Image 1: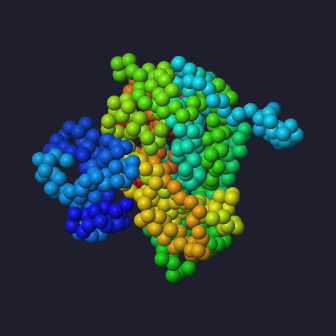
Image 2: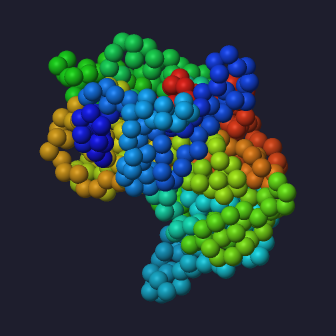
Image 3: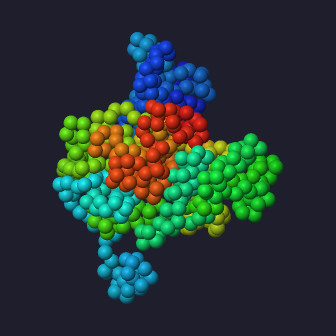
Length: 93
Length: 419
């Protein structure tokens, strides 16, 4: 699997660190709603198909990325810097 | 007379092997059953068998989307062990090992359970302390564990690099003598035949495409072979758990599906006679009766349903293998494959009633499901038949995450790739 880092171009999987599902929304830190925290900490959509997920180019430019990848084929469909992806969606993942 | 015996072998050999019954029938699905089990792998077949044997519930169908045993029961590294730290795990897996010890007789099918032992190598004084603590927990829980010194390891497993110049010098090892390996396909076939003989319908090439419901209650399934009704529907679908639950409208669940690779070398003469694990990374290896070395390591570490992995993990596993057994450096790899693991959020399984009325769930086996097959089937059948868990699976509830009583062996937290 090659991941095309926006800074560095296509690089080998071994340079990247997987950070998991990028669609989760962290509750307000002041919130005491245990249901919302349970859902954030433990539950995942775990789709068979397109999956928005965080990767970090840990052994490269160290950028945090949001990658849209097909979990059935490992094909990568979209790629953005995590900050840009967050700003583009108005702060929602 | 048992269906399979020395006498029946001779008798059938004399008559040209024309009279063997099929190991299981190929029935058409009936319109309704008392219980439907989705998933014709080890756990699903074992559940059907114990439903029939222990609870007298024989009007049961096992639905399998492909052919019988085509999932993880036929894709694992065949290790059976109960060398755990936490009391819930020790109780459950030791129960399972005890069931394994009688399984070939129980099923009248040789599952080739070989109690050759599992040896966890420790590479630092800290790791040795940790392993000895785990060994004491195993003894305390009624299991077995022995601490081996490097000299004892040298006699038991001559191939291990025990030199002081090893990248991770060996300081000792924790041996569980009653652990071992089994013939994985035979487990599926043995349970299938035993369940079939008790009246269970095993229906292959029958994929569940939706659930039939009355309000919240599950009342059956729609499949590629028509609608089938049932009072109770049990799921034992491993890596496909999230996909099947989505058919019932459950969009979020504490499971991620990951890929785990496994490898087999070319056949060689007897090299190791137990399962050996490497503590400097994550690696485990045993030798099959055919002579191939069967081994694996960590997950690839990202969500996947692809049943195939990538090369960085292959590189890592081979590196660990050669660090541990330098003599294996020139062995050729015969084959490798990947399976889809239902990684739960604490590394322990979920065997429970629910989450919907009429539904029962058996999942979250991470990559340790094979050894659990008998106990999983036994306790899941109990849960389905009695609508309450058996003592051994009571801790493995779905609500444990919300209630903060997770069973997290390595203490890694809700990060499935690390379990």
